[in-house]
Image 1 (tube, one colour):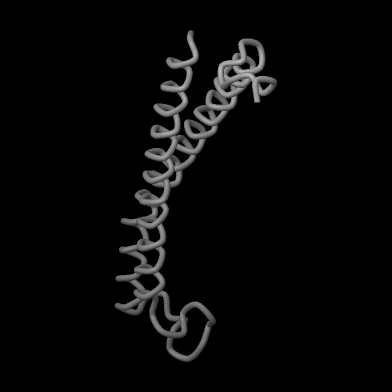
Image 2: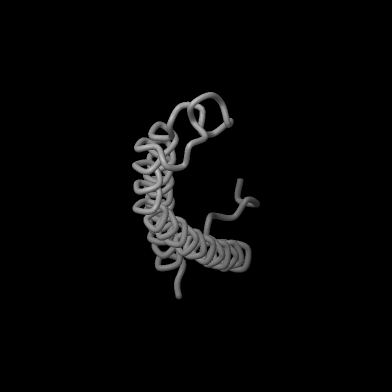
Amino acid sequence: MGFASDTGRVMLLSATKSDLEFQIQSLQQSDTQISTMLMNALPLGAAGGGAGGGDPNSPQMLQYLSLEAKFNPVSTQLEMRIQQLQAQAQATQTEIDSVNKVINSDVKDFGLLGNKSNG
């Protein structure tokens, strides 16, 4: 590839990486919202074993367990997708680094950015 195409490739890869990072951030925010919703639905005192919260057969606890059973698979799917996107972002960064090395080598070898000795 030439200098211009390598530079274009870095720009495309950088945009791709930014898109992946945005997707990761959005999914992490969704996962956090699910966790927050579940924590808010937890019956008062159930987390710490306080007064009134320890009865696993109470209607509030049964409702919470139903919500938890519904949303835990969603949270797991979000986490798996986040891991996939993080791997893609890492691979994209590796390719960016590789193309940048080629660009830097071209600049050094061919003096593409001008000759400093000409002043």
